[in-house]
Length: 325
Ligand code: ATP
Image (cartoon, rainbow, N blue to C red; front, side, top):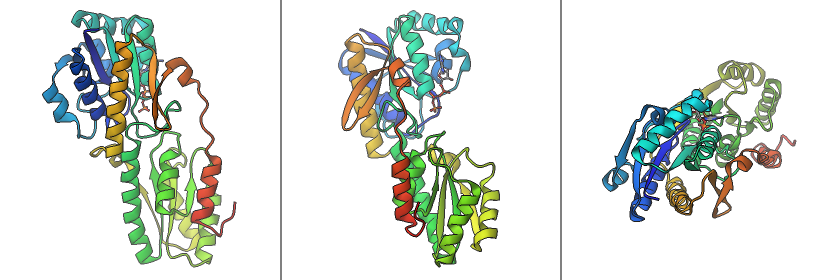
């Protein structure tokens, strides 16, 4: 194999650059030329493809976001559109591709493999919602951002005897919320996997108020309640705490990647290139314990989600010990 491409697709995540950098450096050390495709599959069909060198790889290694850009292109599900992308790759002599993104991006990678371009997927998302990997590139950095924010909110709530609702990202995966609530001692936790009704949240906070808890943090995952500010008002009316809501939003997506995310990204990037050198395609890289493994993409996409209800309930009972589940 002489020439490969690399692209980032779907939502950006800290560590994507480290993965791209790793692919460029490791492939180069194996005498393989690397081309970056700008803006994901969109760049593939528009021929936004450029050769990358070692200086570029070094310049992006530690940066947040994705320097080569990402985009969503739903039309890529259409075979005719994908053919344009394959033709562009062939024009440059690019034989294979590393795709860094989420489940949707993996689908595109699988389709391209079926069209003769071997693709390897890397798990890049802050949401940790890729079942075939214990952790995804970007999760650790986002988690640290969330924890830092909640710690700061706690300082203020504790000073003023108040309650706060903090909405975190996760895209229907509660891991960011669960891990952040665990790390900050948040008293109330509601995620997609173990959703509390608004009434249940008000009741839990009210119980804490009756127990004279000085401050209360309620961590909720995004996309679960129509309006967290309205939820804060209900908590205030029920519990008596002055209650404020904070939607952390896109600060969770940005920032310098943590050392753990860089480590995962760089080792996964090398592992992906090794798969391409071995002539493999239609695979995605996952972390299984401390070991990197390659899964068939089709199988990976149908893996069942791990049941986290027990962990969630344990943390709930630890952080608000007087509300036994
Ligand atoms: P995130 O977790 O950040 O949402 P993702 O990779 O799951 O990342 P998607 O928007 O679902 O994000 O997918 C990214 C891109 O992958 C899509 O915009 C589209 O170009 C491509 N894609 C998604 N589904 C398919 C499919 N069935 N066939 C071909 N390409 C697809």
